[in-house]
Length: 340
Image 1 (cartoon, rainbow, N blue to C red):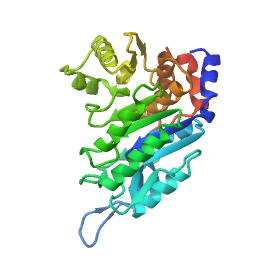
Image 2: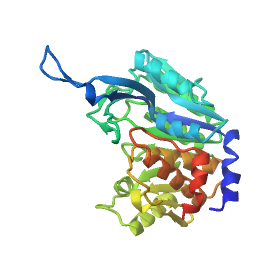
Image 3: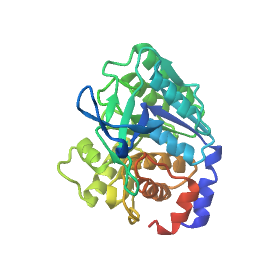
Image 4: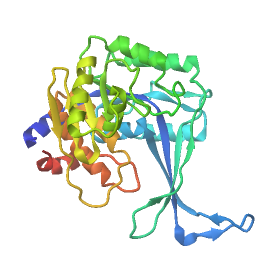
C-alpha cells in the first residue's frame, strides 16, 4: 500500500459512525506481585497479593477499543450489562473512550455482567504470566424484553451508521446479545443494501444472515463441511464458495499464514502476515482485524486495502504483552512499507 493511499483511507475515520452489536464484557486484570507471596494462616494455602487492578472493555469491547483507537468519529455499542459492580466498571470504561455513545447500551437487573477476571503474575524484566482465569457469564436465555430492545436498537442504528460489526462471544446460544430475534432483524434490515456489516462468532456463523463473514481457517472449514487443517489453497477455494453463496465478501484469518478476502465474483486477495519483531501474545489480534476491516470498508477501501490495513494492526497488537492491545493509525503508518 502506498503512503498516500493509507492517508486517504485513514483520514476518513474521524467522520465515520460505527455500530458494534454484541457481547461486551469487562476484562479485569489483577496484577500479582510474587515478591509479596504469603501463606494463609487460616487455610495454609498460598496467598497472591494484588498490587494493581485495572479494567477495560473486553469481548465485543475489544473490537470497540480498536475502533476507538483508530480515531472513529462516533461509536454506538449495542449490548447489555448487569446492575452490579462489574456493570458499573464496564459502563465507566466504555464512556471513557473517545466517540462512544451509550444510548443503546442497556443496564438491566435481568442479566449479570459478562466478566473475565485475569490474574497476572508481574515480575520485573519478565513478560506477565496469566494464571487460571475466573469468568462470570449468563447461562440462561436472554429475556425477551432485553432481546427485543437490542433488536430495536439494531434496526434504528443500521439506518444511520457507515458500518456495523456483530460479535457473538457467548458459549451457549441465546444467552447473549446475538439472539435469533436480533439475527432476524439484522437479515431484514441489511437485505439488498451495500452497508458493510461484518459478523464474527465464537460458535461459528452457521445460521447468520448474508452479511460479511469474518472467521479463522478452522471455522471456515467447519462451516463449509471441510475436514482437517485447510491448506492456503483450500482456504481460498472455500472462501470463494461461501462468498458466492452469500453474495458478500468473506474474510479469513490464517495466523502466521496471513489473511484472505474472497469476493462473490470469484476474486481472491491474500496478504501475508508481517514478520515477528519479538515475543508475542495473540490475544485480541482477531478483534483488531475485525475493527480495521470494518473501518477500511466504510472509508471506501478495496478488499485488498482492507486486508493490508488489518495485517498492520494485527502485527502491532500481537507484540503487546499482558494486555488485549490496540493499534493506532500513527503506529500503523510506521509499518506501511512492510505490508505485502
